[in-house]
Image (cartoon, one colour):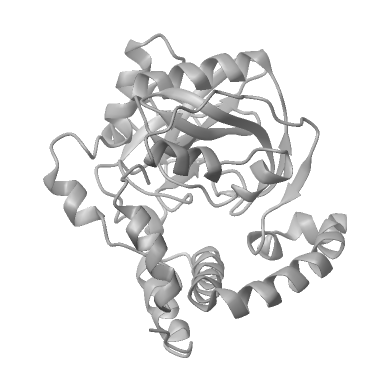
Length: 305
């Protein structure tokens, strides 16, 4: 999202272009160094003095104790992350690309994100993931904004080391001693980014200003103590239903989404697909059966231009 040429695509929305979803991964593969992978990123952060959980090869299963985290070198939304409580690798993890092990740290997962210019934060937001789906490894179904100095220092240092530009986020986990450990970066808009807006952070005005070559004054303030449910993901999280927070958030979200779907049908279609993928992936243990079931369900969805 740092490419000024996207401005012309945005202007083209006036010509019946609802939403632009460019397929960028093949191009990224051709760009030297563009795809670092999770292990390489971990090493980069570790060399910069940022805490990163110990890692080992899958063949050393047991060397880091149990539970242990099994990860693929690439993946998003928790699709390539599994927590193993014993020496059994689930069938859904058999297709991981370049898998590795990471020491398990018991504690809440946190998110830090914002708008950046070559690693320099222009806007900033931090939160604890109070509900995740899937539990422990998935994206946030609910966030609670926090302003914790230790997390702020670790996150700002991580973005500086990565040199990221545009909208990005990173995940951290806090141990019993209150220390934050870097898990992985997301150099793109993240799924629960509406929580930043709820906490008073405008991500898009400074982003567009950087596209236009304007000087943006950093403003890293946000409101702490703001609880935000992530629509539509919270609909799948049992904890949200049991707590009653789904019922509190749903009426306003339904009204907003109904109006939104009329303006942005392609993006509304995308949200439905995302919800189906998440539900099917959680409901079926096998990655092969998950793919087949997603395909069969999505075949019944209306196709949009």
